[in-house]
Length: 170
Image (cartoon, rainbow, N blue to C red; front, side):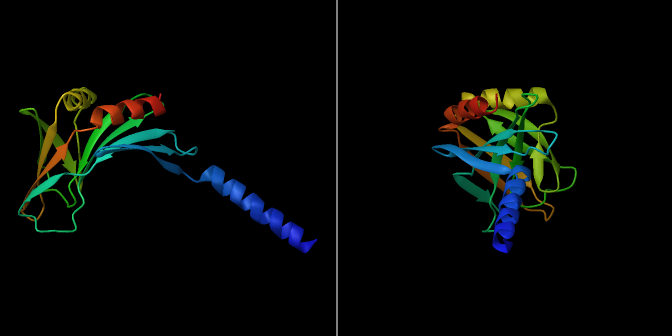
């Protein structure tokens, strides 16, 4: 009888944890772009989906060889809002901007610690629209340590990854 109680307690614990725990699933990979689904039933934001990529080329004088920059598009299923963000692998210079160049059009992203975002939802929409029709993005950031980096991202596969993300987070 003792073992049956223990078994059911363990089973119940796994069931509860599975309901509370968040699920992050890699949905698909399209060349340089990966689609993720993240569902947290306890979060007020609900389900989110992401499209992310790492740079194909990194230049600058930052010197941190372990730096793992990425660009991320987040879609919130609840309100269909999409957000562009950039992580360069270091803390940005306070009150600085990150400059994103897509097809000769420059966008300025505001920074906070080690992340950068567009200032408005309209800018996010414009950046994503440009990304869908371009082949390369260059992102330049200045660090709190007076160094800089320019990360170049290929947009090969972005259109398909973006469509998949929208399908998952309808």
